[in-house]
Length: 266
Image (cartoon, rainbow, N blue to C red; front, side, top):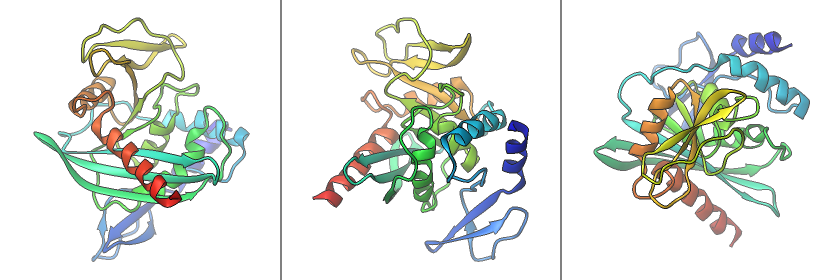
């Protein structure tokens, strides 16, 4: 079953093109019209309209496609992605922000979309609930970020396939899970020094770290999403923590989507 899912995922990759705010799709292997600029590529790995049982099978199969390697080239742009949720209307507000790393963080772009939840809340399957709406926000980007930070887990997940891994694989882009709370694993106490960390161990394997980004604050939980090493993930997070516990791209995305939610509901 898992092999069949992986084979199906690899058999139909779709890329999305962006130009003049127009989004078109073409089959992998084809050539886009000359006046469009190709930015993020989206791999259509599975249907989003599936049962929770099938979703677990998809996670178990697709985690085998994750790549753990050093990010190629210097990180020049870094994105943050987050979602705000209104419980009464079950409406999501998804946002993606992109910063340029140029000595300091410079905001380059911000995109947001809103939509309804179409998958129930089930622990461990959050990416099937939030993934579709987040991908709609990513499709609006004109900037192709070198790395994406997600407010969620990467491989520090019961099946080693959290939100950062799932969306990172679909976007074929280096991704990092940056969560405020621990989902799985155990870790030793983290020294009260900015930059100190302790490995997060789950099923006898290191799946991330508990990282203290600021003195006298709780550590955050950093894990590999896709196409990056843990050392590079830690470095990227620390480089973008501008005096706060949460790295600025994720913090800004969080403020951005909450502001949109409040404006929409007022």
